[in-house]
Image (cartoon, rainbow, N blue to C red):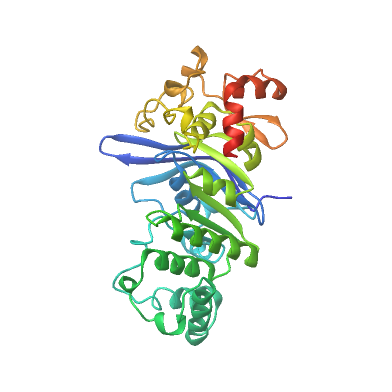
Length: 343
């Protein structure tokens, strides 16, 4: 099966007064039709900037320096702005991170939905309004026909996130990018929003690219996971394999830091150090200053993404010569029971 989206060697820099920020340093990422892919990592690792680069909505000081973004075989990096506008929303839609600031406070919900629908779906304004109401009702907005003419401040954070989902799906895109869709929402509302995304994906046969740092959300919604660190991809595997036998030391550290109900195991594990400053990133593997498996080579050479078995990729010097059968014992060791419990 051909990928719906294939990102190859994507390099994105930001030019600031302090210097050049190497936000993305050769990102490779694939999403297949109808697949749910998780993009996971700490804040500042390049998850959101990858999405912005795909849609070409970077800040004015950001620029794609190299690489390809192939959507249905077409390189989006090479499209003119007018051609790219036909892709955004209609082909690839995005739910932005903060529902409290993603809607224009001075425009009614109808103003923020109808014009876009009419433009991309080639329908009249009346038909576009009906489609907008239908989309709002589908995500659980009660009295959608009346409330569509209200302003965003009349809605709670959870309801605003539903509106953003409705707006994103009204154009029936093939790919939905959801960037931390449960940020700033309480736990109950988070569960409702995730259930809506899951239902809409199945109803419209969407591919989903879910950006998050919440591994619980990843376990529930995704088929495959890309682990990001320092503007690079550290590991790619099925969601099951990520939880049951992670390969990259960073993935292992993320899983170990998940809170457990078993209080007898002591204090919560943490990852030492801080996320690297990408204006002056570490040489070699960007995780090596925080890695307990690091060796001399890690601080000098950039690790190459290597396929250990079908569909399982890792960029790590430590395990370059280790067979997959040995990996389970060497990497997991005493952590295996702990990770399996969380999986």
